[in-house]
Amino acid sequence: MQMKGLLKDYTLPGLLDKLDVIECFEQPGKSLRVGEMLEKQKELYYDMGVNPPGSL
Image (tube, rainbow, N blue to C red; front, side, top):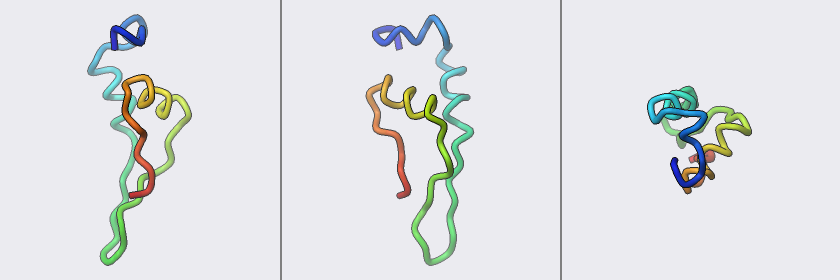
């Protein structure tokens, strides 16, 4: 977070709260699906060096 300058805008719990609202849906006999993600949420994943989840 420090290397990407995220500490000026977020605390660690605050950043995790932004990503926690992404929903995952499960139906019996089908694969998991990730709900809609905002562009800002995708940017946070990339800033942290993690690929954002897609439909799993």
